[in-house]
Image (cartoon, rainbow, N blue to C red; front, side, top):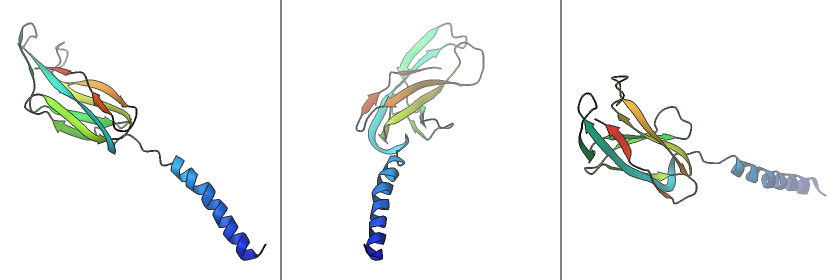
Length: 138
């Protein structure tokens, strides 16, 4: 073998080994850039100030819904509900997400808002996952 052939052969072998390794290490984390959707509604239960009398139940407009990608500590996206309480996060990759809204604490343990959280798993590409109603207290 000539040295030019050996060099070409060595480079070809390295490329054959490197390309599959690069593809394995390029696994995409949960987040935007996919073809899946998570959607649902926010149901509001409107109580009196002591949470003893339910005054009204309705799907809440203009309520912030938050989305956490994978194991992130903070939300990666947020959206307000439509006039009928619906919300939707589009263009997501397969993975695990957390969807949450903030609610008054019905136990009256704190005056701070508390999260109502749902974990959602998108198993494959091109999924439409409906989340059960996120129920908040007002």
